[in-house]
Amino acid sequence: MNSNLDNKKNLLLEKLRELGIKDEKVLEIMAEIPREDFIADYLRPQAYENAALPIESEQTISQPYIVAYMTQELKVKKKHKVLEIGTGSGYQSVVLARMCKRLFTVERHMPLYKGAEEMFKKFRLFNITTLFGNGIKGWKEQAPFDRIMVTAAGEDIPDELLYQLKDGGIMIIPVGGQDETQHIVRVTREGDDFKVKTLLPVKFVPLLSGIVHSS
Ligand code: SAH
Image 1 (tube, helix red, strand yellow):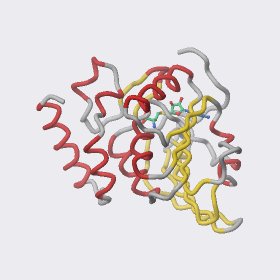
Image 2 (image 1 turned 30 degrees about the vertical axis):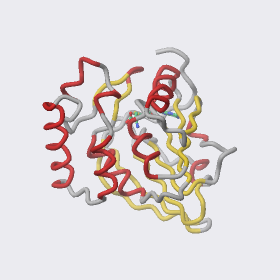
Image 3 (image 1 turned 90 degrees about the vertical axis):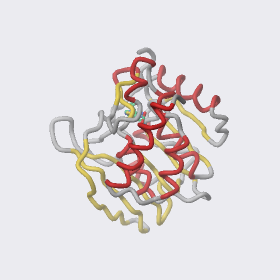
């Protein structure tokens, strides 16, 4: 990485601390991952701005603060089996995979699914399993999960995801329509009860059904 991007990365990490990110493991991992590799060349100079950026298929790579915040609130442990819905660029997946035992990640856009698979190979992350499909249904064959992270906003919390959480498991999901204020919500499963806590206001692309084969 050139020293200009290096400087910008250090400034961004300082900013994340100022904004209240306290989990040292999350900060350490984000310091190690080259965000510039997950975006188009023309956007490289903006790789360490605290902003969401466009990726293929009219989607976005999430804002670094939101990646850090959602990961911190998910309270991932090394022994965990984690499900991510919305692979996108694969950046958030790499952060999660570095924190857990196994990551299962689902994407509904074929070009993004393929691009992310390449990135996981490049980074030699062999604890990630990818699926091209509709993540609203979760991943029944691999359930239950200790943790679930959804990186697209649903109008509601999908029931099928709730029941793929282990007892005591946690899900982080942005909730709300495209024309209203969305919030990151944390769901904790306690038997057949689900404790819901509303966290930050956010703006995410929509969680949609069905799959898309081209860009
Ligand atoms: N974590 C990604 C965020 C990408 S944006 C990143 O930082 O790059 C959200 C992603 O969710 C998009 O790629 C979108 O295609 C995907 N998505 C939306 N609805 C989905 C669904 N039902 N199943 C799987 N992926 C979905």
